[in-house]
Image (cartoon, rainbow, N blue to C red; front, side, top):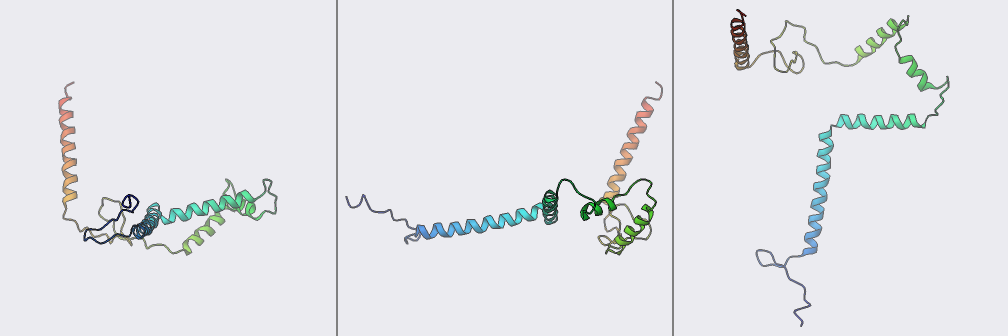
Length: 166
């Protein structure tokens, strides 16, 4: 009768008693750390810039919702929005375009390539800060594309020859 009410003793491979409560706690902490790590990687996978942009869009929407429906002439946001719009036939539009171009020119840009036309590459990347324009391949891609173009030309010539007398 005494053996019916006793707790089961769990042992590990070496024969020592296992502390199940401690193991559950450790497993829960490990699962929480894994979930946090997964959330971090998921956030990185979505894209940090996209997250910031989405957060900015939400903040802008909340800001717009807090404004009254009827906006008056002294509303600064409305005034700024109307000033930034470009209208057809605006005599000052050229001046504003020049000013915006000058402002955007002041921003740091990556240097552009100004040399001779570079060899074509698979990704259509112009030389610059990402690529120096030197073709370091062994020529396999050019040969492959030349063979494909040659095969198409031969097929087209054969087709034209076959339908020539029709």
